[in-house]
Length: 470
Image (tube, rainbow, N blue to C red):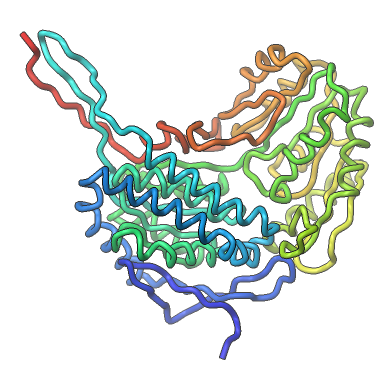
């Protein structure tokens, strides 16, 4: 009998197994630590039917939804310590960061539990009173990635459920177990069918997006898969929110000393071992300061504690999976082959660990600059003047986020507005909050998550005309 941890799907409020299981690996060892069910076509249909059946009652009572979402927030906080271990085992991140995914998710649920959902008065005069009413879309297919499995799932669940939709949720096959555990946790809180959690490979995601019961798709993942999701949705005009990749620039102006901001730049690039869609991927600094910034970041790379997520001293864990590890190794090798100077810290030899690596002597035309690395690598790129930096920062098909750093925040803000991206920060990077919309430009996405606009992504507008007051 297997000693691996086992998890079940949640369909119609019940625990559902599958005749076929797949292994889930610990990225710190590359060994199996759990098994997850491979959802069948019939089980997918059952999940969609359960979500459809639960929709009329769930969508009818906003006050009930608010109370339930508040309860979900409390349960997430109470379970964070226990479920963090499940998340670390499959994702690799340190336990403290895994716990944060659950406690931060509670903030999202509380925000949407309290967010006003009021009828908007569009016109009120002698001719007509016109109201705008937001209605739920129906069944939502939510497909989530492996870098922040719980937090990004709840970025979708909280507004979707608050708006009165029901959800079928599928995590990445690299990190299904914490999300399956989330489904198990919420069975006793959410009415049956309101949240269905299934697991499987990428074919399951394709079947979800094509399913006729789905009226909304919320997807976070790669640009390539985003294209496929959009094409599938077009068949019967499903609405989509797509949060895709980023190759996010940080531009440091000529009035900032390296040591003053090196810590913030380092962690803006290395949060979650660099596996964050909006992390700094390209660091542009004045040409005459490339060496100084390289040295400052290299010092931090040498001292960064890369290790197993269950060790209290670990600041960074491994890359999550073998394909991504191979990609990062290849990008660094390509940069070195093109003449880059590389300095790396230390990391364990097991699993998918990769040392924090700082690169100097790279520019556009080298893959590490042109592509999204999604790993613990920081390329330091020199520019001649602010116009040169801005042109190069924008010379990409990505447009998720970026930042500008200066001793003069107003000067930085003026340049930040010229970045072709969804979110631009001044003297910070990766600041996020439940009430602030987040989305991408160009190929980095369609639509937004979070805030009132994020709620609206899960609704349709109905306009009600009535006779005027005359």
